[in-house]
Structures are given as structure tokens and as C-alpha cells.
Image (cartoon, rainbow, N blue to C red):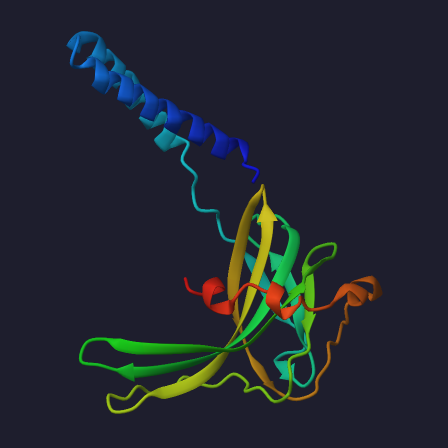
Length: 219
């Protein structure tokens, strides 16, 4: 498994801190003065390791323009993703479309949730001059976006919603963004279709190759 230079630097400082700490603790029994100097050096290495620690990658920031709007069950769910806030185009971008059934029940001071991942599919996203493009063809038998019902303390109230997860690598780190989108029954197609070369590669990943939706969306 390969590591970025930042990860290797963090590991080097951490290993040095641990080794020097062991040496300092062992030296305490023989000569406290060198041991204290050694432990101070270990503290310095630990501080440098803390500064070099891996940080959670910044999320992607794209503005979604659906095409058609809204997306169509039995037609296309597609569109374009325009970068915002200086977001760079990720390497090997992918998009996952997820249909979720969310059930909720009100308690005295809390709300209980139950989520079922009804359907999901991952496809490549294609880089154009100023955006990423994508297109799905979800089955018409699925349920479209539904309004969230009022909560009840006596029964579970359920509704369906749709999420687009954008993923790709930026500077060696996998980053992602989650976007809600509206999907309704229909047969509408993209007004601006994918480029022919992109359409030829627009195939879903095999089901067993896709990351489970519950792991992808647990945050």
C-alpha cells in the first residue's frame, strides 16, 4: 500500500517519538539527567508528529444542475457538476445515485430513524471543459422523491429521497460530496446528452464492485 509524503513524514516522527520515549524511560533507572533530556526530545518528536498528522480531506464542492430537471424514473437522471470554492477536478471521478427510504418516529425528546437503501448504482463522471457530466437510467418501478411527512409519536412515518454522491481523488486523497436531488416518474431524457465518447463508457459498475450504500452514506 502506497503512502503520500505527508503520511510518511507523520509515521517517521511518530516512530521516533515512541523509540526515544522507550529509551528515556529505560534511562531513568540509571541516570535521571540524560533521561530527562531524552524524554524532552521524545516530546519534541511527538509534537512534530502531531503537526504532521493526517487530516480529514476537504470535501468536494460542486454545484449541481440536473438534466432533465427533475430527474426521471424510466428516463434519465443526469446533469452537470460545476466546481465551486476553488475545487479542483478530481482524478477518476465517480458518481453514485442512491434511493433511500427513511422512516421516523417521534419520541419524548428524540426522533428515531430507520434507513433502507432501496437502490443504488455507481457510474463514471466525465470531465468536460468546465464541469463533470453524468447520466443514470434508474428503473421506472422505483419510488420518486417524496415530501417528508409530519412526525408521529404513535407510528412510523416514511418517505423516499434521492442522493448523488460524487467521489474522486485530489492530491492523492479520496474526497466526496453528497447532494440531494429531485426524482419523479417519467420518461424525460437529457436535453444536452453526453458526448459520444463519454456515452460509450457510461456503464454501471458491477453490483459486487460497488461500495455498499450504507457505508458510503453513514456519515
